[in-house]
Image (cartoon, rainbow, N blue to C red):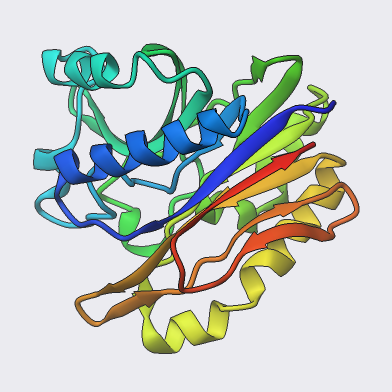
Length: 241
């Protein structure tokens, strides 16, 4: 394909949309300068991975003036952006990845396979849309989706070139250690099944009594990690596929 793509391992931000958006714009501009045509950001990054009474309060309606202002702020960025956020539509709340092109919303993917405490907070999505940039066809899985082969299989018949995976693995220390090296193992299986590239994006750092190491990586069709940002460090991955 010879298309340059990028992914970001971001410092975790909790309930500070303005700061999260500033970081997104900064990383996206850096990726743009390096020739990236697509940039992936972590799951629920805009508001933080908030599961509880405040989830609905923090959720964004994608038809709102507030969201229009966000679109205005990213309108000068050329790469396609895949950004995780908490979305509300009518009475339903979704764990959503939005797809933006120069400040225009071109589509959404809503997490299908909800995890643990997400049940009762989020509504599951049901659709597996395909997007395209510079001839590169891509689908999206969000974090726990990757634990289920059917989430990837929904794209295989559509002939994707890339699976884009916003993740947010801020966990208690015991779980974080248990999963530290499993994430890429599972993602490698999905890449082989889809016979496509897979790029993930994750958070890193500590929050409350939780920690996230990442990882953020690019994996090829054979399940080989081609490039990875060092764990526990924010960074930008830029690579041709």
